[in-house]
Image (cartoon, rainbow over all chains, first blue to last red; front, side):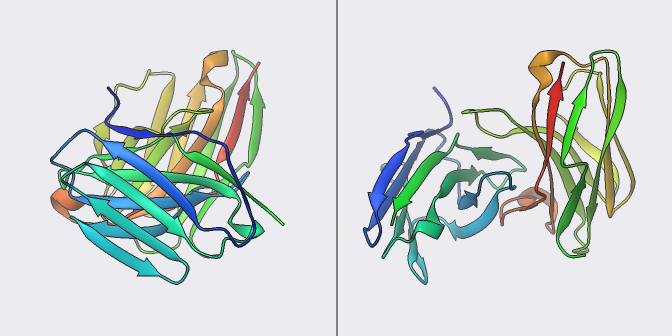
Length: 110
Length: 117
């Protein structure tokens, strides 16, 4: 079983839709959770970072962590074509190790 | 220049060649990393340097040889690679301490797209 699992997609939505991206993880020691956005031919860019359970909001983006079900989500409101990218989730134990998901490709159609 | 800069952006090399990838960070971070990204696979950590000392080598074959002359520069020397080494090689940096290194996220460069023929 992979430590962090992510549906590869692709996920295609119309402009203005609410997007839900999800990951599951298996290691209950994970405490830090991150979402990265990666555009084509670019490196990943840190979008959101959260510690433990709960929600964090930044503009149109909301990160949610449910430690009881080991579930990580990223919601994008009012999605734009510029949101088209690959989204990577990542988890960290607090013990040096960051584990990445394989990424979900998102297409937002104008 | 800001952030993390990687050169070259693209590299095609034969299996008998020797080449080097270069990374420079302008953020004053104390940790630098090499990651390998293959299609539809999670990022694979290769090497970690903290204050220019190698602190992790993630069972990487010896045909990959890292070098960190100072806390701002990182190199990855390549020799006698295999076609399966073709991938995007990403350099990253972070400003972290102790056990939480990487917990607050990394700043990545744009990567070097390597093709081994």
